Length: 363
Image (cartoon, rainbow, N blue to C red; front, side):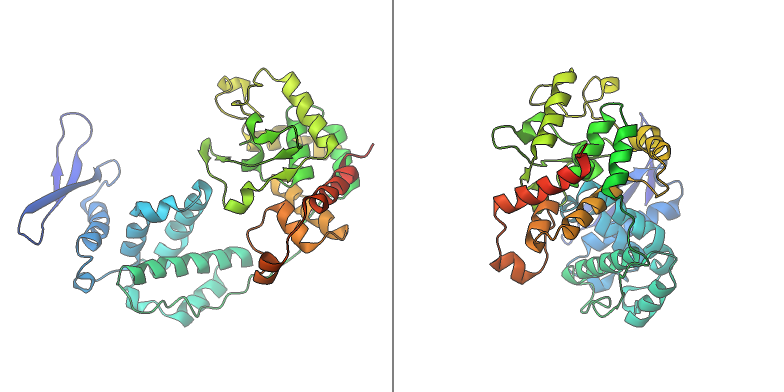
């Protein structure tokens, strides 16, 4: 390991080794801005060593921290993940897994110890399930890279029952909120979130070309998270969504008002960015939606996901067939039997969606 000075830019750490033929090889790990000390650089080199010695993995004692570095630097693994999912994984791995297990060798990670750790972790049940599942993925990669023979996380038990049911707005509360939220395009954002159950990354990622005006449907083709444009979380999220006449009218009026009305333009193109990017949903929530909720007398915790929960709750309350619910919410799986043997017809989905829209937008 050497610190290599460069004519332009900060010095960089260089890792050198000899391959099987005896030829000397080298790789730049990163600059001193990324790895201020040699110890930091050595930690990064551990992941490189693991890759170099992949044919003889047991020659390198592998810690969990090294496995995490290898996993996060594996382009094939990272490309499989949506942008938001990859960021979430990094947060869990850096914030929870490495501090507790990083110094342990892979063989030292035991099922019961992981169960105890998860039980005591100051996280919500669903977050504990996510953390457990991520560790399982991590150790599955270790198995694929022939670093371990058995995945110790396979038998880790972790329940994911909610501590309380999620809050939802009643149709009356939603209409009261809508009455207070007159500013555009935030009112249209709210209507799409409430009447279609779209996630914030989905509605801000819409372009006019995603709407089929002839058959009154909408398809989510991308998501925008922290100004990063990526693919939807799953293929199921791309399924066509029926648009009730009232929602179609709202979108028509939005297109007539905006200066960015070409098929390639964002539905919620921001004039502050010259139309190159959509509005920032979190700013819209804090500056417009939440103050409107206060004025409407709503005391529930208002966030964009609240409206997706509300859409789901209204579908259930209306007695909508479970398969139709799944299709409208674009969930990937509701059970093998339903997915394989039951098909939701378009008329059922349109009727179920129209009933919810009527409840939320009724005058």
